[in-house]
Amino acid sequence: MANTTSGTVTFDKTFAVDEIIQEAYERIGISAVSGYQLKTARRSLNILFQEWGNRGIHYWEVADANIDLIEGQAEYTFYRASGDGTSSVTNPSSIYGVADVLEATLRSNRTQTTQSDSALTKIARSAYSALSAKLSKGTPSQYFVQRFVDKTTITVYPTADSSNASKDIHFYYVKRLQDADATYTDATNVPYRFVPCMVSGLAFYLSQKLNPQLTQTMKLLYEDELARALAEDGSAASTYITPKNYYPNI
Image (cartoon, rainbow, N blue to C red; front, side, top):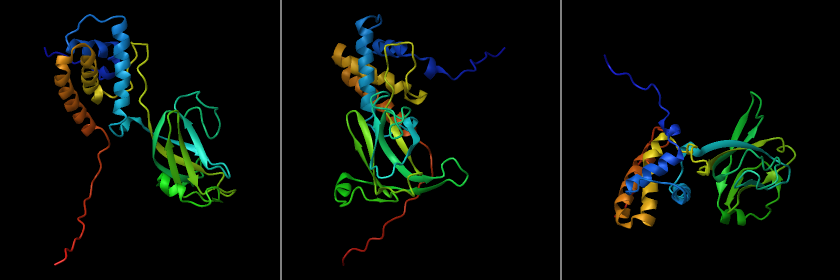
């Protein structure tokens, strides 16, 4: 009789933080883990997640949201963590951990079948600084993003006038990865594709503190598995490349 399969695909969620830590320690030759070893490994895991934030966009952490425009208001604030700022229309308690804003549109009739969007242009600090009348009112067409230690802000230009105050800004943003907290039986905020490189990365970080002779080997394994995970992450779409005409001087 043929063997049956498990019928489940939940390994990434049942693979809890304590098991990730145990696997990483075993890779550097340490089998019995307890007490401070768990704490230092969890700290390293959270540093690893922050390092991933410097590697580019993680598509499982891209979300979208709406904020209500207020007449004459230029800046809208999103705090690093829930509860860091006063909850209001411009700082909804459900929107926090905004690492960056990718795209934004001016949306009208959000809850109706006649909903429509118009694209807003993202500008740099220098372009916003050059605007002479930053608080002028009209139909917002541009936005400027600032990323601080404890918050991220969206500044629109021009500010909404009375005819646009009932509209929203709909935007896509990159969320920060959730921390690995002291509840070691929790799952991580990482899809199954990144479990191998997460374990390899933690082993690399731990080797620097506990088994330096393995650090270079662990780094090579980590970078190799991370590169494969990043290549697989995202959404497949058609790509069109058009050559640019070039006429050299003869």
